[in-house]
Image (cartoon, rainbow, N blue to C red; front, side):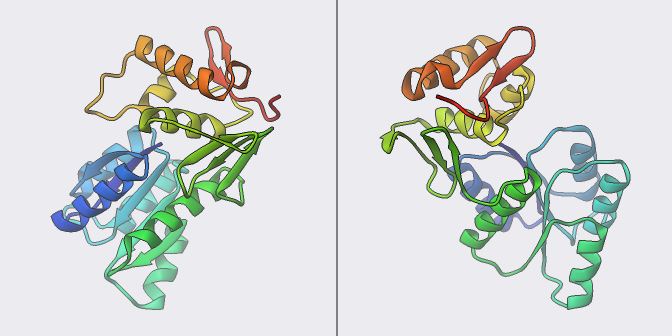
Length: 221
């Protein structure tokens, strides 16, 4: 999943970026308000981690613009502002959750998983499709109770398709959410990757819809 981290503090931004990358996310960053607003308004992200105290444009103003423009991306707000009134203001502006600084990375990851699940109408970090079970928290998958060994890219692909099960995911969307900027976003490479995952979890679990994309059905054999 592709996540935007908006934070002007270099240390915090780097720490959060490393933690999200280690947790299997494709991470992009912004350090000022104007860049953050443009990216969030024109790019497709699975979630956004947004600091409020930004140069150029305040985080709340950015969030209000996104929501006014119909952008429904889940947003986790980070802030050093601690009063309950400011937290209410953030929620009213359209934040999905609020995490005051200082914070533990583990809590940030848990809250991020939670807002992504809520946006998809899901309640648990365990996702079962037939006897295929994906554990978001542990970043693991199993088929019939037997663990499946996946590389980081393979897990990222499977997780995105499972989280979007029942929906045909276009190839362009998969390329954005599976591959980071440092990787070549190549359609042929994606097909090879899908082939590897199919061999590990069962070819029937990932359907190809020619001209449209890929689908993990709601109920797989």
